[in-house]
Length: 376
Image 1 (spheres, rainbow, N blue to C red):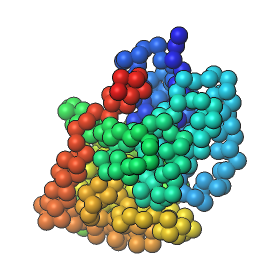
Image 2: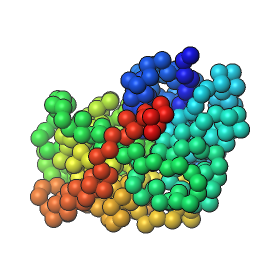
Image 3: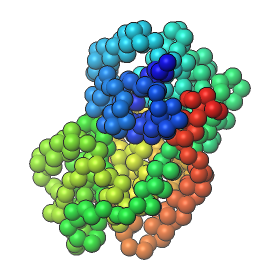
């Protein structure tokens, strides 16, 4: 009998990590059928999608509330399919606002819940930890310090390794692909994978790029986007933006290659910051959201740093330029410190080596597959 597994990955990064896990499961158990919510990477692995991540990738309390009706409909659609298909298990990947609520409903229905990439409850809501222990059967975490967070809860927690480590190592081992840079001095711009992020952050990035161009003659810039939909949003923003560099191009689907070939990068807060660090390109982190969301976030978040690199290191490795402080002048000044052989650049690269060591060398996708298949 075929094993049926529900998989939920509501964002671009989760889609990639979920796809690698699905691929590893199918190598062990080819008859396993996956279906649920994901993006292009899960679809490429043969997963039947009920909804695409393009519609699901919304971040921020205010932004989510605006689409509450849509998310409620999708939530019910998933439950209806669960009742119809009666899956053997569920693989929920990150995306906590949706997935923790879903885990509770799945638990009521007797579906075994595997949660991969833990919600960052250690940062913003430790009160959720007991509830997670009640609704999750097994939690697979990607940062070593997270195991201790769930100590004495009764929840089985496994540090499976960070999926980016193996992915980046594999990427770095491959020959570089040519990209349409317009000069030898290069800066990558990564404005995020969500519409509201791009609209808020990209104009500031472009204005900062113009200032850097004036300071470092011959600079060229490349914006990397995850898919065609985001590429269209980026191009619309570029057309509207009056202050932008002369040498600017947009590529789709080659973000890591752009990171690797760049001298430095300006990156929107998220998984891409850790990717950039593991690739070894110095970067600054930038983030802007709605005023209300930022205010609420400051009230809720209980950690000293926003960026994953700094959180893992436990100290500032990369500059974090947030909200009102994220001006074109500030972005340009911080990026300028990373150009050429500066002390700031050297210190950041040393911090990257420390982060890589802390993450270890476990192969996350294979470990997740072993757990899902009952081998561990």
